[in-house]
Image (tube, rainbow, N blue to C red; front, side, top):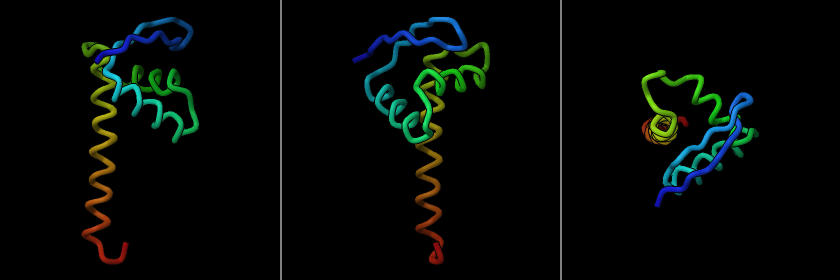
Length: 82
């Protein structure tokens, strides 16, 4: 199920529609980084290609975060000194 939420990003309001699991992961990641969801979304917005819509950019950024963590786990399992 998709959920639409409104956020203020760099002084302007915007609505973003994401599936609930993406909202949860976004919230966890923001909490982990000690920032707000709006600030984290603003970072993702600034880093995205202007031809990519914001919701897609958020999904890709979250997916890449998960892949990076999986790589870290796989790397630590492969390294017996880790």
